[in-house]
Length: 209
Image 1 (cartoon, rainbow, N blue to C red):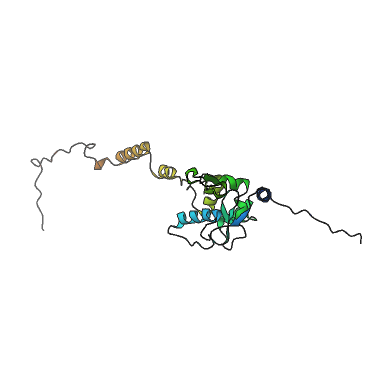
Image 2: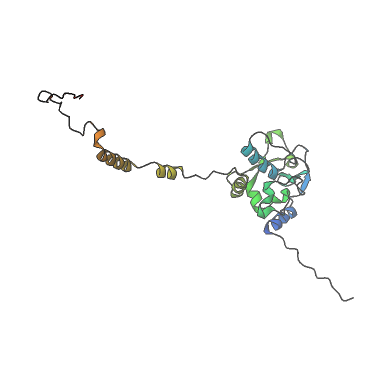
C-alpha cells in the first residue's frame, strides 16, 4: 500500500516549451476555412515549386488546417498526413505545424501583420491577420538548402579557367621557344637565298653506255 509509482518528468524540447507557452497565452487553434493553406507546408511547397517548376501536388495543404485565435496564422494542429522536408528540421521534428509557427523561431520566420481597414468599420473581433515567410531568415535558407533550391555555391569557374588558360607570359614564352627552335618556317628570320648562277656550271652528259 505504500508503493508509489515513479513519475518521471516528460522532457520537452525548448521549441515545445515555447509553443506550449504561446498556447497558454491565447494562441489557440480554431476551425478555419477548408480552402486555407498551412503556413509551414505552403513554405515547403513554394520551394518545391521553385525547384521543379510547374505546380506540385497540393495534397495535404488544406486538410485539417486551423487558424490561430490570437495571430491568425493558418497551420495544421495535428500531425500532417503528408510529411514534407520542413518536418525533418531537427528542432521541429516532434512538433505539429501549429506548434512550429508558435516557437520563437516560428514567430520570426512567419511574420504576422494586421491588415485593418478602419474605413470599413471592422470590429476588434473581425481583424484580418496576414502572414508571410521571411525568405532571408536562416531557417528558410536552411530549408532551401535541404530542398536544393538555396543559393548555389560558386563552382570556382575563375579558378578552373585560370588553371586551363595559360597566362599571357606563358603564351609568350611558348611562342618564343617554338620560334627559336624552328627558324626555317619563318621567312623574316631566315636570310634571303641568292639565285643560282648556272653560267659556269659544266655540262653533264648522260652516258648511256
